Image 1 (cartoon, rainbow, N blue to C red):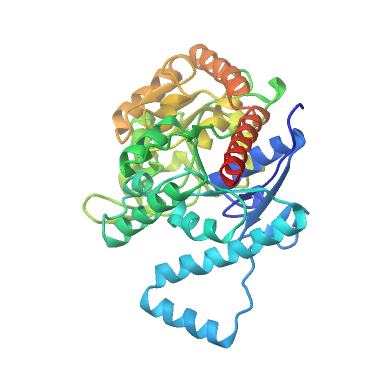
Image 2 (spheres, helix red, strand yellow):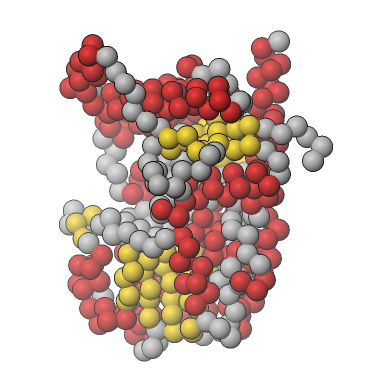
Length: 410
């Protein structure tokens, strides 16, 4: 390989990947697998895991044994400031597991998300560099979810900014989120890098084909919440269903509910029944599905829809293009760094169901054009987002962080 091998740890919200519907876990799975193939040693840390299926390269975040005085102290802290107490407790558990991985496996670096500013609590307690990965800073994702801009929101945004500023290195999946982070916090982040998330490695034989798909089936994979735009997709489908009598929508994802502009809370079934009653019989809600079942759905559906109000660099887009699935996605965030309108997909305005419906109809009316976009998308995915290519970039970045740390120490 020509470069020294690395031993690094990744923090994942849950593990293994097929037991969760989480983009960060999917990212960790892909980049860790790629690094392993390149000869490196990746270790995964997580607090939510399947106890019956723990691989040797996994370290669970387990609750620590506390003295009576420590339990009393924690109890008081929870009464005074519960969010801060939880942050402190999680960071202690993470540090404990990371130290074990350092001692037992020789881990040299830890990569973790920016969430809640954990970095600022973890970094001073570890003898290795800590890298912040900008998976979804709250200042960007919070508004997309409809989170109120209250004191809790502002405190979390501040905490994350402090953690990002203190990290030994920062990487971002998209140029969009890196530039927005620089602007939000007034940080130069001169050593930060943009490294996309890896998509799946899909052979030509496994890809979508026009001859094999169901031309009357649309696919949406994502939570029913404001962030992922499930409401916009339903509204767009209502319009599409009027124009195309045989069209169906397969809705895959957890129902987390949506609060509209008037403050009303909707479940997915309520939204469909009241906002799209004429099309309700043509919407199949499958709920959350294991990752292993999604490939067949992508090959079967004629068009995959991404309706997000904002996205960093969504895996749902990377996965769709890897399979060569014709794609309609919103023109927001890092999506425009992956999709070029009319070249490898079709883009629509975020939050605009009429524009989304028009983009979907554009492909329904031109199947050969849709297939052409899918073929180009699959070529782009193989060239730009293969796990091994992303792992190589990631390893090079980690080596730069380690070298910088070494120079400072000497």
